[in-house]
View 1 (tube, one colour):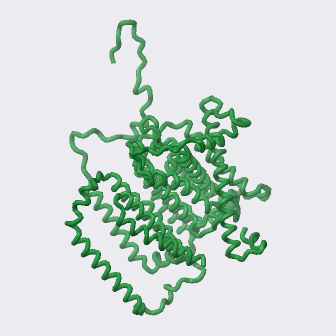
View 2 (cartoon, each protein chain N blue to C red):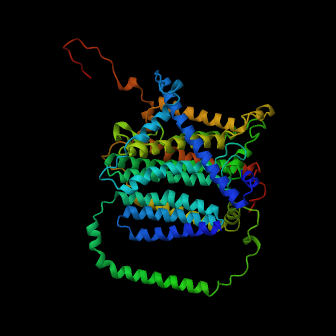
View 3 (cartoon, rainbow over the protein chains, first blue to last red):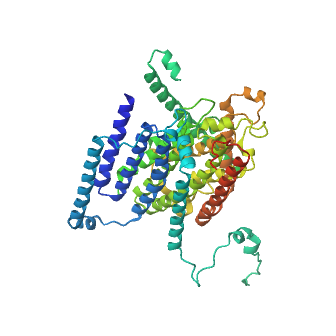
Length: 207
Length: 354
């Protein structure tokens, strides 16, 4: 009973907020609706018993990716009138994408109703033992059977990260301010920076 | 507690539901009460270090000061700036407050004294605390005012940066404990140091990680010396500049609930949670919850002590510390910890692939 209630609760909110992502006038509102959708999708994962995936969904998507989204969108200076002006121009493209998505959805539902692909029964390592937790099962697979693929994925991500840094890195220009030496800043004492002078009246001081 | 409600004649489902709601209510009330007391302690400690008296008028020794303040903000008028984005402006403090309370669901106060003993407890805390940044960002944006917005930008960058190194520190602890369950992590610390000391922090690989975690928890909760989000001289009052009355109080309470959460995480992950400091039978006569509260309170005192004594960081220093010092250091320690555990055979042959 309570599972059904929870499922419909989460599912309704996911769908509704996904609709609101598209419908919202203000892009910041769109991102916030998207975050709500992510969060409730995590709730659905918990219902499926995949609590590890649910937590990762929240940590990675809600906690990191969506924050960056929000960050960028908030910084945009958006002119709403201008945005709506492009509507008729972009409508055909939008309709095309919508049609493709609809066709794919229908295809997917149709294929699902026709019965699953027969991939064979889960056997051996693929069967999750009853007493292992999510994390252990995933870890055993990722770091056991699929270790090579996992490492390759890691290397690809590393290369992408280094690539992004290389592309955006600008070497300091010749005339630019000297780089900060933190050690030097910390070693600096009040005696190095200040002097005590006791000038005669009307004398002034020379620094 | 489920068993108690079952004995009253409820079916298991209803007993579970009622017990969970009761547990949530009890824990949130207790957390709110301790937040009120802890704000008083904070002000007293600050007063003592600055050689003034601190709050001493309301109630004996000023003990009721926080409640008087609470009543005051409750009776004030909520002002919403006309240029603000009303919906988000009002939701933001609620998010901060809710998220700060939600994380307490998996904190074990004593053996078995917690709302939900889930397997992924530590990940749940990470997930919930990463939500906390939204309250700040939304309030800063919705206020439609430049200082709150600057503050929100600073806060989100700061929280994300330090969450990364906190994540790696947690990995080290999890490697030692072999579980993400907080009760399991505390249990694994029993007799950890030479069979005598109930704390992870005595291990030479974990002590530096605790230092990183402690400093990161200061940064994560935007406490001094990392309180750049509300640097008065630059940003008025930071992201809460435009807030008044209860909406302001919600930020305030949420902030302190987060600070207490970080203190209790220090206790649970590195200092043995509800276990007494030494593995001696006599010490177990003191209830576990007392040990837990004592340790948490000790960390809170350290938080206030640091607030009173350390000058504020510059923003570039903050980022440098997070990305150039803590991140490489914690990465190195993750590698060192797993190598050490592999070498000493703590994992057994479970992961012997080659």
